[in-house]
Picture 1 (tube, rainbow, N blue to C red):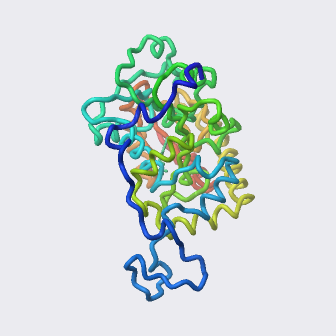
Picture 2: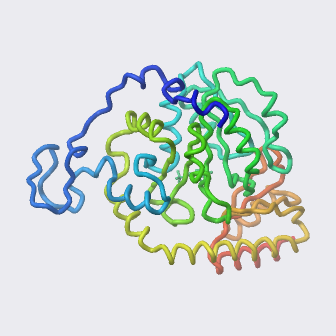
Length: 351
Ligand SMILES: Cc1ncc(COP(=O)(O)O)c(C=O)c1O
């Protein structure tokens, strides 16, 4: 980063966050880890239910597993109730309501805009090109006044493509605020994570989730990877018990199934190809956008009609037609081989 030595997240964050003393909970100091200690510090119910104790606010055991999985120091990780929560924490730490702005590249994941709205932060949209690439001309000519964060979704939802690494690198080198790269779908690609470049870019924040490749959308476990300075600012404002005990233990259990997860991901990637090939043969399909994720965006003749026809057959897909550059598109999540077969067979019966 050209301005590496100048970058200090304290210069970006909300004034009140700088001086904030975080809530310290009893469980910051000691966790019930099977030893014979008597815990009379947190006003819990002593009767055993399996979850009568507060969860570890620092998620120490999970943190250690994920740190080794991601090959990152533990102080470069923050966990939340889904990535949506860690994204919200970024807004609340860095953007002053009614004053600051963020940049998004539509069409993209809708929550960046929703969270900006909730936090009363302005959104400057720089549309992707019709090939769903970042429009670097427009980026370079943008006025960045009071712009604290910029969101790059790669692979992008809903288009499914990875953003060009050269473009991302230029943005990391030139944007003075935080560059948030959302990698919710990274495990479905061969591409390496931007988390491997954290030491090169102090303004880089990488978001991942256990909701997609790890098959744990129901437990809500999102993670944020960044410099230790950014992580400690976010730790100041995170609710102490934001990741519950059931989530921590279920995530831990699942992380031990590395080979199984990889074979499930391989199957989804192989099925994505099957789906893409079958979709290309349909007379009413105009374009199948190449995907690096676990879904495929498809342009059809009449999206509303095809959406309703599928619904009548009990198949729910996502109509993305209202998004920029996505007129008449449907987004199909890759299902099990049986579900995909049913989808393809049904599509072939439509006229
Ligand atoms: C790009 C992107 N980021 C984040 C999320 C949300 O992830 P989580 O389930 O961890 O909140 C989604 C969910 O669809 C997504 O598409």
